[in-house]
Image 1 (cartoon, helix red, strand yellow):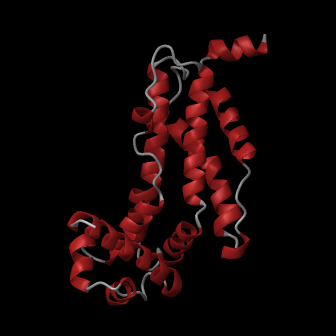
Image 2 (cartoon, helix red, strand yellow):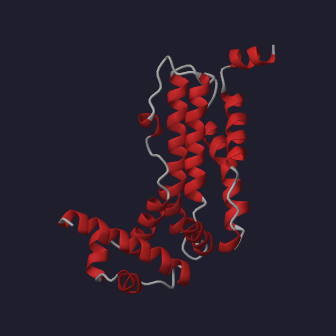
Image 3 (tube, helix red, strand yellow):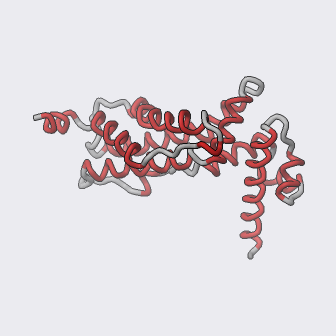
Length: 215
């Protein structure tokens, strides 16, 4: 491998070790020395990549939630984009978010953040930036692009709609993931997620299209 490839692989090993150590010991009780040792790296290398333990947790969360930061750019909309194609884009975003957020490694870290935030409130801000803001931003980008192309009702508030899109998906994460043990995580059926997206899409479609469906 090249030097650059070695650096990428080393960084990934540290991230994977961090997930294991945090899951086993919790955030507060884990040390950068433990994580470096588990990764077969030096603390100096760890600090050079991530700065400190908080930076390492942020990077671990971000790496697990590869939720598309630029979904609209990946599938740009045009005046020719149909409502069905727009719903497909929403469905792809939803499936990606649920898939990322239902990973056992992610659920383990999310559980740690929830449990330890009362002792370290900065974890809430870290989690919000690494996960929540990115998920809402991804949904907002798609909805804003759809609104620009007349695929979303002009009266829809994009920020509120993004919350309405992401919120129901988080019920799967909470009820079927975080509140279950690692060996009993229940992945949602693809059809269930798709039905949720279809209901959301009907709610944000331009009024004229909803009226046509009802007539």
